[in-house]
Image (tube, helix red, strand yellow):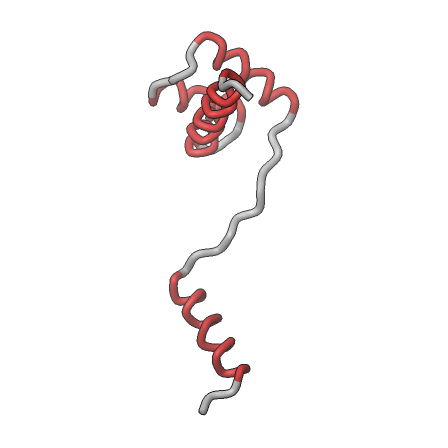
Length: 83
């Protein structure tokens, strides 16, 4: 029968073999948020070119831009729902 320590070791190896690490959460600067909000007001669904431009200008990854807009749309939608 395996001890509890062996079982934990197996779980750690499984997680390591998956190669996934949780990345640290990134906080956007006030200037980045201001630019993102201004763009959101004009284009709530930016296309690839707009996301690439924002990515270069703000020094963020394109995926960060994509997820920021996705989260912002979700917040906007939730604020319209009746309580």
